[in-house]
Image 1 (cartoon, rainbow, N blue to C red):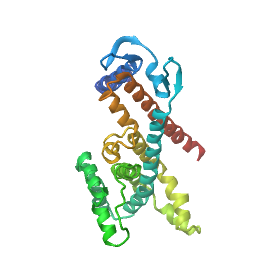
Image 2 (tube, one colour):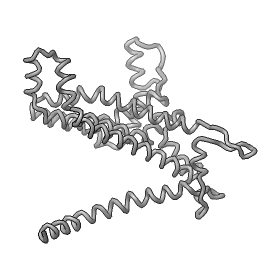
Image 3 (tube, rainbow, N blue to C red):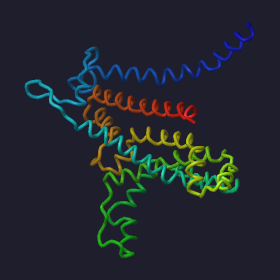
Image 4 (tube, rainbow, N blue to C red):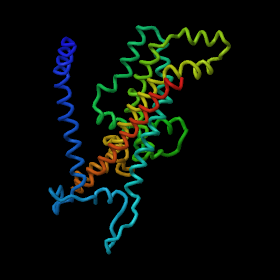
Length: 297
């Protein structure tokens, strides 16, 4: 018993630095942000310390009329739902491309797999800002894509897709594609492919074997990839700022503007807490589905 107690203490001392680091650099800033979200905006911007109010959260859904009555204002709510919609669209697009890509990689010889993993991770070698500027050069009017399409006679004028929701979706899909491919590949790479051969022996065609055998076994990787794509997309800032041109705000751009030009820190903190709540809901849904799946199976 004493020996077990000693081992427990040693383990506690080993993990104590990590727990303290996470607690200081994550929990303390979140607590400060939560406190600021219940304060008033200072007369010159920033925060009026010591004055607590729920006005920043009220401002998310309402605006005050001249007689101080509350009027429903859905502008910020539309930005919030646009962020959720773009994050969900990006997740679906990365899954549609990432699943076949990961399956192709898993079916290759081991030496070729390493080369393919290397190619998938190459975008991480370049700064995100540079990659987004590259997409600007491709999607702008009379850019490379327009020149190719007009040169082939497929279009008579530029598409004009830059600074739109389409360009944001393209940029986000490109940016977060590796986060979908790699978790799915990790699940498929460990799969026993004799199960697929058994499905063929039982009369299954390729589509049924994929639907009944491969996808269920790859589901942990698919779920992890969806979380790794959806959550960062919710708070994406650089890609919507550069490829959206300020025409399609996302929640990350709105938060930045509140802490920057608007200097309304309490409202920016309230928006940050709303974003954090959305992220936690996504994580809770993932955990619920992940824990339920083994029992349901």
